[in-house]
Length: 139
Image (cartoon, rainbow, N blue to C red):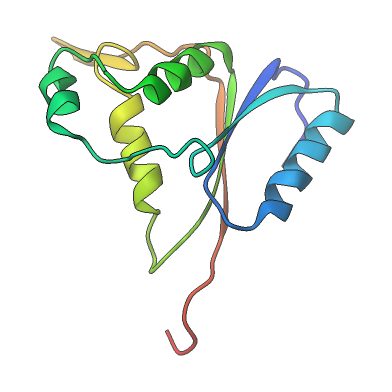
């Protein structure tokens, strides 16, 4: 992870069973005197699936999930996002996909205009992804 002093506030998304990675990233940010917030999707018991209520709010870009509301507030404050997750079976874990689907909603993160996508989260300057790659032997 390269140091860049322009990042005032980092938001770490953690969904990995290797806690040492999370600890190391926090240590690095603290040593650089960079502020951060952290989201641990498993600790929060984040449900990546849409239930009937959540789906009924989708078109309006709304949510009934208190975690989603909390995550959206944190997103508005951060200018760098750091995702930490494993790659399972050559793919992103479902909890990360569900996080993006439920949190990065139309009218919150973006909108669609006559000329294409209109980005709302202009505070975000950089996104970093850190992955681990465990897989069964022989694959």
